[in-house]
Image (cartoon, rainbow, N blue to C red; front, side, top):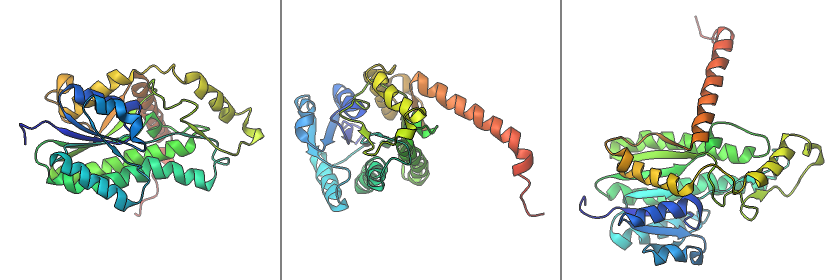
Length: 286
């Protein structure tokens, strides 16, 4: 198996990290099976040598399992699964409907879970170096007014990934969670982000209203370069380039802004513990 090129299966490959991870892997001579809900949206990847398939990560599990089986039959093995599907729901917690909440979790969390469940039998059967990459976010570390449901999904993705890592490490499969900061993808485009149908006027002059405005201002002005970020991800997952000789980390904290944000959250958490431990730790049985 070591003499054969790695095979990647990537969800949501029509844009953003899914697309550019696929292009980076193809540029290295790897095999890529790229998926999207509409395959015409990934025709450019097909022109670059990828096999393209239709996959909606919210489809019934039997359909996802069928795609996984057919993907494995394409080359006979799969080394790398990248769960890149996701979107942001914008709205205060009071504003978002139960249906909007479910849809957010259904794509960002249950989609990741169900695709992983469908592909794991084939990844386990593959020898050699194997990885599963799930996408968290800088939002995995800090809540924020106006996008609480999105943050909830990304905290879930990071927590689930930590557990998957513990479960799959004994089987020789490395699991990591990619936690990007703000990268210049189409993620915040007006046509991509979902605004809650209900908007309550009392929130307009609060942080929620500010977020609605700011996301449009940030769109296409993010500091992160998705091409550079995707190269770093592929280097890490293949233990090559600047990552040669390194183990795959539990999390890939991607982007200078994400690193800064995580360090701030850690410092705030330590300060909180230092202040409250004398009160909140006096709860053990004597």
